[in-house]
Image 1 (cartoon, rainbow, N blue to C red):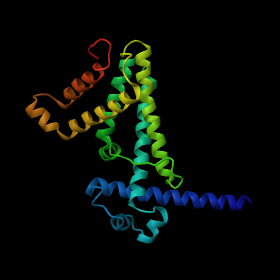
Image 2 (cartoon, helix red, strand yellow):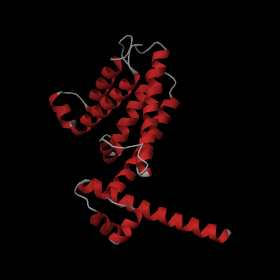
Image 3 (cartoon, rainbow, N blue to C red):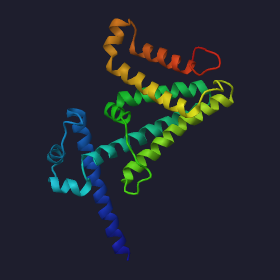
Length: 220
């Protein structure tokens, strides 16, 4: 009985090892050549697997992409959760969230760009692959961190009480991700034509965003 259990565990560990190896190779190719330009043949060749073996571990390229999305979301959730738990002051928490998102984009540009793309998940369909369900649930947990942040601001009398929370959560994600991505991709333009630095542009943009829901505008 114990021998059978150990055998099963070793098989799972081996499968996990192969899946992780494939994901790392795929991530490298996605970063180098782009997601659209990378095929399953490319991944199999680089990973030194046969294409048939590759399909043992992943149904298609879409599943590989979604597994990478899930990994990136776990990293992001851990970063934001840590930043919101460390800082007690509300505006310090906001600055910490902005810092973590910016650092995340600089460190994992591929993850960040994949993360902000539309992810269609039919959570009510029993045939929905588990990875899609995990992506949806983790996305809701990330939204929940921002939801708590906004509710705390309202209860402390720092944020306006008339703001609609679900819309504001989505608005903040859209605004923060757009600001950070634009600053990353347009760094030279910001420096040459705005006569400012990327860091100053980010601070100005983050301050302007939070001021839109403050009861009283202030330098944050």
